[in-house]
Image 1: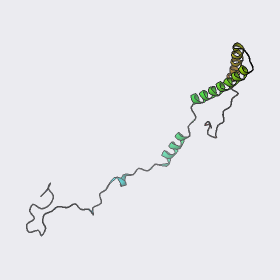
Image 2 (image 1 turned 120 degrees about the vertical axis):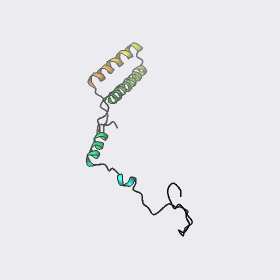
Image 3 (image 1 turned 180 degrees about the vertical axis):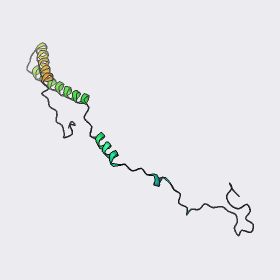
Image 4 (image 1 turned 90 degrees about the vertical axis):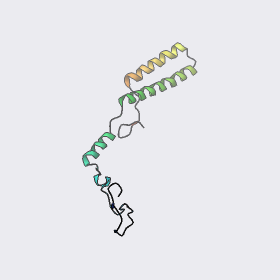
Length: 115
């Protein structure tokens, strides 16, 4: 007998006393306890995936575009032979105009994300 399983003695039983596992037994397992997602869970997941874009990131992108435009203007003015003070003053005026009006509109898709 092994761990309380099997015969105390194989004598007279017609077997050799070797204990084997029953491979035909199907154990109740994890497959019975599957929790499928309900319609409410799927609706919540959809709502989370279509959230609004981060305003900080959008502001940073807008400021970066403005700085690129200012750098391009600065290069053009320097190539025309203007002095450093004049270039700096014109670039600052241009930058303040772009910041106040927000004329740079970034391309967006139907969800409001930047392209």
